[in-house]
Amino acid sequence: MKLNEFIKKILFNFFIIIFIFFLDRLSKNLVLEYFNQSIDQSFVINSYLRFTLLWNGGVAFGLLHFEEKLFYNIITSIICIVLIIVIWLSIKSSGLKRICYLMILGGGLGNIFDRLHYGSVIDFIDINYKNFHWFIFNVADIFITIGILLLVISEFKKK
Image 1 (tube, rainbow, N blue to C red):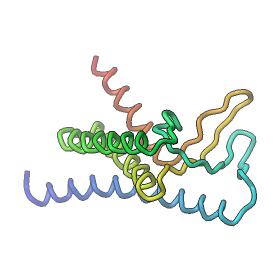
Image 2: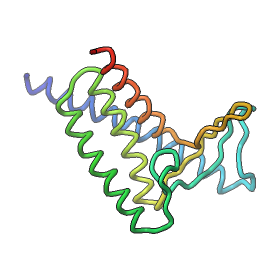
Image 3: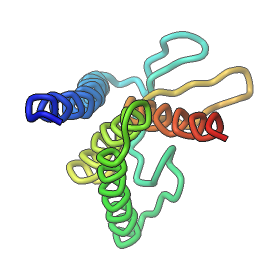
């Protein structure tokens, strides 16, 4: 592979990660700005979607939420190790798989930034339909979920 092709590949990968990270940061900053200026607990978009600010100290979708800082720090360390593994997997893969890993990485970096900067992750997208209420999540979670789902689908298609 020529040096120019290698540099373009690295820049493209970096762009995907930074783009996802930027979208996540932008959305969270806008939500924080709105809720800092508002007395409302949530902003209703329609009967299915609202923005509700939630500080998530757990893992994905608020699971494993602990008040104890030791457990929070252990979980944060595990997430950092997983992100390092995802970096390695993205380097070793190509095509759709690489894009999936980069999506997971971009979203993961957005959430780890929150953990390190705020001490918890900013979640705000609140979806419900009739009696079904999904976990509150954020833009980073969307990219992580899509990346994981596409990886799973691609593995099933192989077999």
